[in-house]
Image (cartoon, rainbow over all chains, first blue to last red; front, side, top):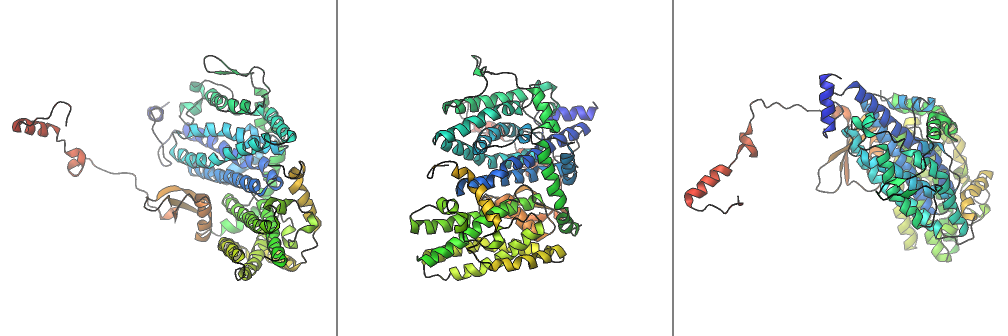
Length: 299
Length: 192
Length: 96
């Protein structure tokens, strides 16, 4: 590492903030782009499992709330891709890499949504897992990203409430409705436990070293369990892990998540990975003329 | 409010509900991310208008907006043919948006003159939001006016504005099936 | 074209940079900024400006430490202590 890079490292590790036009090591820029791009991809792909349920929403209120939630996620991807573009990678190239499979998106968005129970559980638990990571990103060393995280976290606040509202209404309803929630929790538990990634020590994680992330994977997972397992149990719901318990030292113990499944899924082999990427590709191809007409004239 | 007025409000509500759904079909896959967000707001406004209109009629009939929106049979809806179509091409969606907003402006203009204060008041509120929709439609019209596929879409869709409202395309029944499947899975009156 | 968006949260507050949108012209930029930064009533007003119109300044030169026009150029504590002693009005320990 050069002298300048070493100084930069010390700067970010002591809380220093970096702006778009500041000098930054090539490795920092590359890691930043990759990390932020994956986030943008995830928001954009996360829309697809949920949007199917906008039509099927059983009340006008739920229809509006779900549309607004999905809209927020698209909005987040816009904010995020703008940050990546200002770092040097244009939006269209990000979308190329997403569709070709070169760039990744989070595991949870590779799975199907099967029932209205999923709608509630995703907004309640999947969004909760994501928000824990997002809150930690408020301290990202790269300031433009930290700033949009503020807006993202603020908008996400209603998503969790909406999720909880859907779940509580179902849990207070018919036996069939309660079954919807339990079945969804059981099915989503595996992906949720894999979501924060495997527990590599913070100091071995380049994202943490550069202070792009301000928390390690295991720390995030523990936060999730601490916040949400009590919420799950207090409703009389069960989680499909007999080993799950909070030990005396305050740390949650659990069965080892299936890291092979995680690796398999994020490399594009999840149950819905290809179908959703195909949808993205087709939508993009059929609307290419619109971008040409609208954006080319401005050039 | 008399029966005729109720029928008129239901027709507008049905138009807004079905069009709101069709417009929200673009959420997540619109041609531009910024447009995706904007168009989704328009879709939400439409569903919001539908809700407000259903609520007015629901009070007259001692029922709820949700029951009016979802629990009627497909052939009881009073929406126009033009909103029922699934239009996965952007030029057609915008053509429909432009034509509908034009027709809707005229319709709302009449409602604003209603003797019923509540109807007139709601029409004025909706119209103020629709002004923004009209601006958006005009903006896209100006951009696409030289595109052959767009002018062709306008020609193709314009006649559908005036179709009878008591018969529907098979697309509406299909839409209704999916729209009500969750709701129908449990007894009437179940909370969601 | 990229447009920078500044938002004012409530009347009386400063306009702050909120982000940017890509749009072909001012008309589209209006719509898109309005949506991204105001759809929830979170802003009272927005300024939308083409990025090209923004002049960026981030280097300021003060080689000779011109503190005569700043508060930190006026450390008064010692002088005040001395003056109080002279007048016999020295404040009890801990006071300034």
